[in-house]
Length: 295
Picture (cartoon, rainbow, N blue to C red):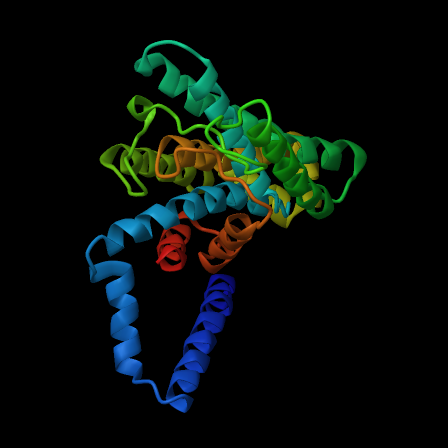
């Protein structure tokens, strides 16, 4: 019953948005059939459209999967944007500064992104469980700190010498390190995304850890009575959220973007939260919602 109500509450706003959009198109004289076919062609059937949908679904999916763990633990971690940016920063620093063969530098660059994102997320987790800080305020503020830090690095120590003025940009990472060319996707990126989905699904849906997380989030008093280490579980949830968001930043650097994500507009991070909620806080639903929003 609760799952059915959750499904209705997630799907109803989408249906209302579709109905309102349809009414608006009819009122302004547009053919609804042409609009729908245009949307489908632009997102799926047009040349390169499906690959572009996958490309923009990638960061949304990864951040939403990370957010899922905190949501299960009863924590509202809205710092995915900052964690993604820090992941990209760690990756580009290793990719630009560490000499060595590609087969060593590329994995280390991804690992650096995962670590940077994980630690950036772990900080508000520690402040929450140790000091009782409000995780919404702390993670929101850390988004802006990440923006400023990445801006300082990309206009200072790692700035592209070919770029003039105060434009925030690092040099593009070496083409040999890139997992995809241009702004598209590749088989390597799809494999990494599939592995990430599988790991998230096992941890969240098919493990004792995932069950304990849900227990801690839905019945914290009962979880403590059962002897569960609630604080440790919450810290692991924060760490996993940052790991997935950091991976999103790493794959942007080594994939379509070639550089770390910069700028103060937290669109991706907050959209990923919507993706997780619309996906009913379950891995299969999040995958479908990410494709919907990525299109």
